[in-house]
Length: 157
Image (cartoon, rainbow, N blue to C red; front, side, top):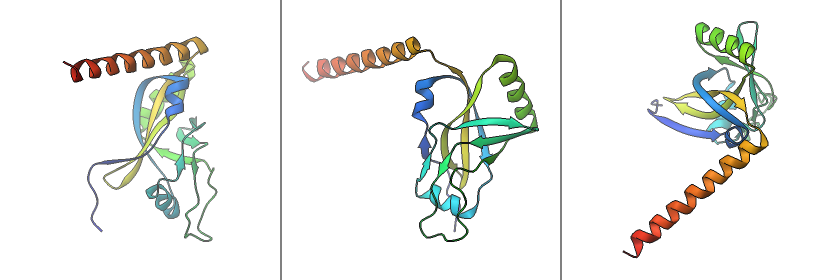
């Protein structure tokens, strides 16, 4: 089977963009079992309420739910198990020190296939307060109204 080139998005964590300001984004590989990859190909993953933790110089993905493969049997693993992320050592050290110093959080924002391999996009995030969430919602609404008005303007001119 030939390796497909390009990016195919499996899932996005929209809740992360609602709850956090994402400052920087990093790409990381992940250690998975065969049936988990088959479930990901079917799009059965949930990134909601998940986060990344640094332990003993390694990055661990916690709270990601990958549903068991339908046609799998005893090889299906626990859907909520912690999974190891694969990143360069210098990136891990940089992220670990930033998280410790500034009190930021590492949140998975996207899961996708890149050249046939599963990748996770990890964002360095600062928490939003309730008034920040209301402001971003108001900005989105205003932008949508402006775009709609511009579209109608073009239609009738």
